[in-house]
Amino acid sequence: MTMKLRIGYVPLTDAALLHVAKAQGFAAARGLELDLVRETSWANIRDRLALGHFDAAHMLAPAAIASSIGVGQMQTQLVAPVALGLNGNAITVSRALFDSLQRSAEGDLADPRVTAKALAGIARKRKEKGEAALTFGHVFPFSSHHYQLRLWMRAGGLDPENDVRLIVTPPPFMVETLREGHVDGFCVGAPWNSLAVAAGVGTILHSGTAIVRNCPEKVLAFRAEWVLERPAEASALAHAIGEASQWASEPSNRTALVVLLASVSEPGVSAETIDQILESQPPEHQAPPRVSAATATGLRLDPAAIAAHRSHALWLFAQMAAAGQVAYSQVLAATAAAVYQPILGPAIAGPIDAPLVFDGPEFTPDDLPSYLKAMGIAPRG
Amino acid sequence: MDRDLRIAVIDKNPLRAAILEEGLREAGHSGVVRIDDTADLLDRIRVIDPDVILIDLESPSRDVLEQMFQVSRTVARPVAMFIDRSDAAMIDAAVDAGVSAYIVDGLRKDRVKPILDMTISRFNAFARLKDELERTKSQLEDRKAIDRAKMLVMRAKAISEEQAYALMRKTAMNENKKIADIARSIITAAELLR
Image (cartoon, rainbow over all chains, first blue to last red; front, side, top):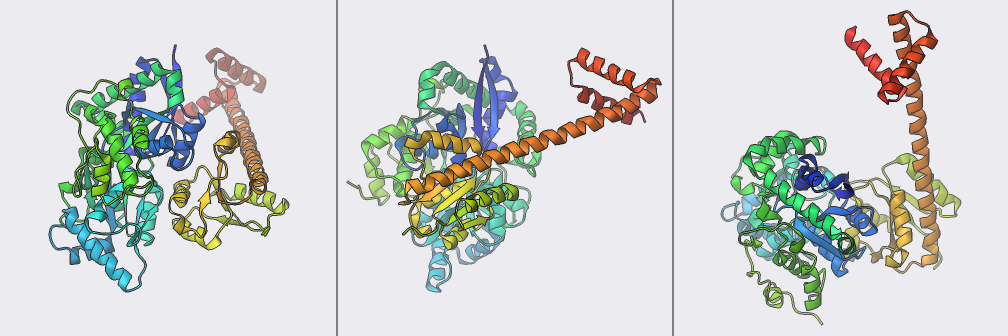
């Protein structure tokens, strides 16, 4: 008996493992027929998953947590047996901002501490002159892209609420908004940074991994209710993703992976671009000055990268609290952690790849209040 | 207090947006503004300061609207989605129709419901219209392909029109295909052999 699953996804490189699970027959071998449905917004993914139009979805991990702890719209308890990868984002800035940073930076531009300080100086000067605040785009209020921008700016002493504007910009509009000066930079996932560079409107300043190593990204999310009714199917899909991850990290499958991803990508995304993203090399059109291997996206699809570690969920929850989106409580933290249900996924050996921020206090999953205090967040209530 | 509601419609399909706009005007809402799905959406919305925002679900700008719930300082008044968990059936109907609504907090539910009902019905009507147009178009194209293939078969085999059609129908039945598909294969083959 084959069961048909409708799965929503956003056409990004990190939806890869869903495509592999389908195309390479890993899902079919476990009795699942995958109907992958392309979506245009994270809000649609969330709503259609909550409403039961989708059985599962490629979802921003923080958005899955937000839904489950009752922050934002369409509150529904979700469950993620596996992640769909780690890393993949980058911070791209306009040519003009890159030039200003280059002029005012004291030190190596590859060092996010140096650029954050320089950025703070530029933002302050703008304020003094009464000019419009520097504006940065990200993809969703509950996204690691948003938190990576905040962590970067924090290192320069910038207040993301008052010194800059952080706005959601749909990835398909990022290149256009950068060209027209609606934003001065953005943090977005692959392949969009590469496209901005190819269009000649931006320079990749930092890879996401320069800000946060092992940054949690997307998860395979189900409604908790659905998983309770069909635990075997949820687990089967999670295991198929595990097999897809093994297949995708096999070097001999690289060409097949690139061809597959090119066939399901947005128009204008070439196989070469995808190959570079997977290779974690800076794109060919990258502006020459000093941007090196540090700009690699670091997108990881390997088996260790799909483990749904609870410490990852707690780290994301802490970033939500640090961004003022939620007030910390023990109950909410436990609810956030419970979104990740690795027990339903494949067994993944090896040490936990904990998220590691380039600056700021050390993350202590067992003691969130201390971490938040060190981040300058006063306990509420 | 009971001033005209300002309704912003974000829809990149001009025909559907016009159909919706017309419906809203007929229902007495004159303050309807259509916004393009553009890069500076937040600024546009701030200027229009709408009470209700209706957005096509195919628009990636939905995620921009989501942010307005998080950062209320970007708009004059805090915004909240009218349809909450208690209105699951209505959310379902809206998403099925391909539309979502964002409503300024504090707006009376009884004022919003008819607007949303109207939007859903117009979106559904548009979807039916589109289906029908597409069906008509494909029927027309099928007809044309069958006629052309028939001519090719008549010429190639020196048979009558009825015989050519009967042959194509028999082939379609044998291969479990539509006669239009068989016709297209014949046309393709003829082009290759030319």
